[in-house]
Length: 249
Length: 181
Image 1 (cartoon, rainbow over the protein chains, first blue to last red):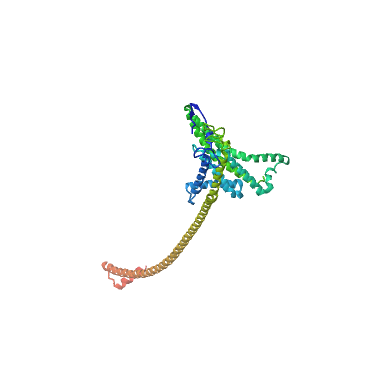
Image 2 (image 1 turned 120 degrees about the horizontal axis):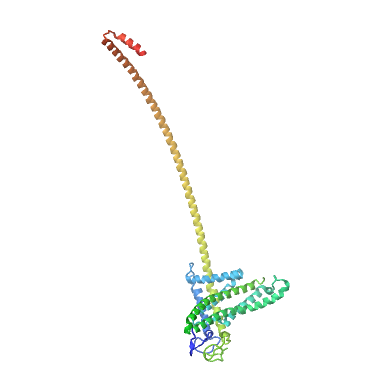
């Protein structure tokens, strides 16, 4: 992981880990090129399949360890959807579970040294965040028609305040996808960049022990962040979905 | 797209192979990332919604069913155990009552027999006592007679020894008079 020193001077390249490059041969990165980004995304798919499909292949009434983990994830998200969004939202559970398990596995796979972290890229998280935003907005209008706009009209506030609140609500509504996606990308990117910086310091003998303990500490924090960001992304999706299904305060 | 770049270098990667600025903001790579992201998401969604999630739902439902059935069976067995205990207690109480009855009956029978035996013994004793009474009175009578005879003999002998002459009849009359007091 260490960038090492070049010519005796300390050189950091904390952002190099985020470079997208072709897996096979050199060349330009076209739309369909099989890049390291593609590899780690597909590895996440493989891991999801291994856990959720192969792990549950025996359909054991008394679950094996892997099946137990798969059931735990299922129950965790199912309960979240049910509690946060409501019982009528259970039909959207597969979409939300897809988001959760994808982000979770991307985050954790990114913790493998020398790996590439797809969820550190705005391109990826923006698709997720704006995907949720558009899906939820369209769903809100389809389910509630024009009364979906009642989401912005805070009927519990004094009448004079309502237009002001409506402006604030509308701004906050349109900021949602931005914060939703940048929160995830920012957390993952920052953590991994800090890891790289510590790794760079580890090349200097005098501060190497400190840097290595720093790496250990940040790594532990990143393990936590990986799960928490997946959780936060999912629960916010549930909250937005709840607004779409029940727009009235 | 990124067709104008050559080699590993692109607009976002410097000639030394390190990133220029934030790779996250490199527009050249975004179509590629988005394309593969969508592939990955669609793949995960189909695998989950077609295979994994229904399967887990089935497994969980089956487990719930099994647990419910087992609990019901356990409840049944418990009920049966309670019933068996009740039956056992009832049988025990019945047996006890029967035993009490038998004991009471036996006691009564024994009492009756005892009473009968006592009565019989009493009667026998009474008969024996009467017999003995009779024998005693006979003995007493014969003893009086003997005493009289002995007295008369002794009196006669004493009179003769004293040198008197007394005939038997006089002696007998005198003894009789003395014995009557």
